[in-house]
Length: 482
Image (cartoon, rainbow, N blue to C red; front, side, top):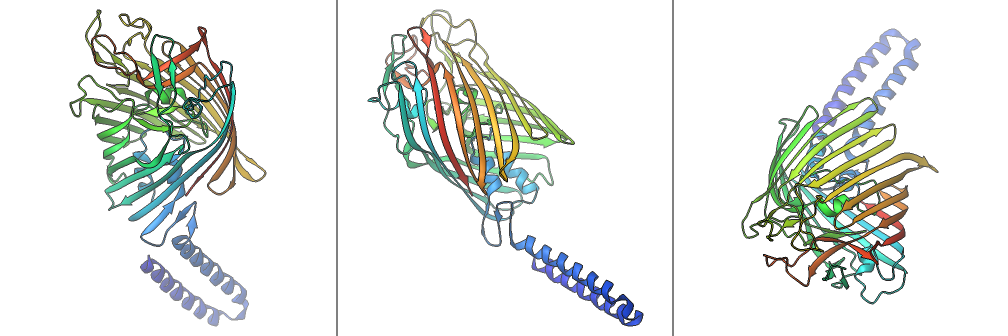
């Protein structure tokens, strides 16, 4: 960096000397033009020096330890989908990060109010876990997320990413036990932790500026589907039921608008909790032989282009072992249940649109009749959009989304939000969420599925008097990153 500045100064000195000679030979008539020319060149030099050592777009550089806020938003915000290793690889390709360590952090705090039509049937796990909570309305303060990340860029080909954090530290009890309506009782998954947990830890391999191939190894989101969101707080239901996390190794290729990855994974712990906001997010991985290693796999393909002000992307994916499991019964043998995914993203003229559809490869056990199977597969989908604009001089976004999952009953969610950035990298917003059907993320139940020792049921839609439970949530959210 210093050599560039010195070379520039030398070049300007030579130019200045030449211009001074020209000035002496041509007389005083060119005085003003020569002085103006020299001033412009000095201003350009000062701009170059400032760009090398200053703070630009949330990036602070100049030493071994740096920050780059745009990458933190891509890696930790609720808006991001899967395949986040590409954020690191693309930031390196663009020159936004270099050798050294890049620290990042997130704080998300919320004030929640929820009303349900059936007493104590809450859709948000923050309220579900309070066994003593009765009535039809409740409010709560919560730190939804507090995270720290470190990206070590070892060289131009290898980087390591580490993320630790806590979520909802004020809501850490094991949760309420409820009657699921199918003759079983369910214990709600823990919606919070006060202990710092390892949320991501993996290596990326590749230099997209030189080769289109890349790889990754470690604990991370599984490259299957898209599962992005326009909401500041609420997680779409397709993400809750199908987005997966676990130990994985994979390879990928990206060029000419095409990106493809293939991953191998351990069986995973389908009920292991990853995070919790509007719903509890689990690892969502399970295969038949849970003691084997690397017996699960996923493939993800996508193609997209930018044409002027329009950017679009189409994708599809396959996961061999989801959280769902077809257990042995009178009608067949136990087996994995996989899933297919199709997704799209479109951005044009300050509008963004997301669409996604996921379905299991076959039916799963009917919890109400344990010797039969659903005639239809488990399905989930999302349609959402937002509009970016300026409000009182601040960046602002208005968003709306609809997501649904079809299990023993259908559960759906509508989210509408408005957020603004009053201070750089600090977003504050209000959000309204309407849930029709109470999606229960259950850690355990009280009886085994016939033919197995499996006593777990990953998800269940709770009903009240054979009708879907409706919940209304209003919240105020503040999310800050560095």
